[in-house]
Length: 172
Image (cartoon, rainbow, N blue to C red; front, side):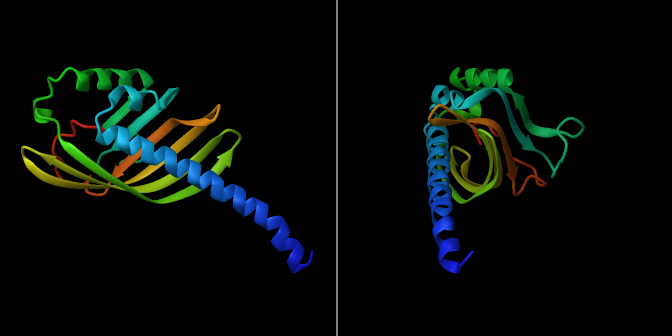
């Protein structure tokens, strides 16, 4: 294959990869906005029925054998959302003001209608207890359903999970 042929055949693949990356980024930005604005029902709708939402503690590598900050299946995600909507979380009265920055989005592996994605997230929280900055390395498994993605798995590895953590009474 000549260089020109390599360039011509690589160009459509690169364009498709760029389109896919843009689509994934838009989904992650949407998720961040829904979390920041406490749009709980809309955020919950982003999950598949077989979803897992995991926030490990102390660098845990196996949520089945090690403590986690959060380790929710789809049913537990719904319970968590319903609890947040009651208004009885006193650490969230009034609700924290949140702003997220999602960056360094990487497409890792694609198999069929699922894709593994990694991104860094910075969360600024302003609450009655003061201002808190959270940094995380997120891993996602997204599944294409129709024209949209749904989250199959989300792992939020807080950078400072080895230290005492304030109450997480908002969506990370």
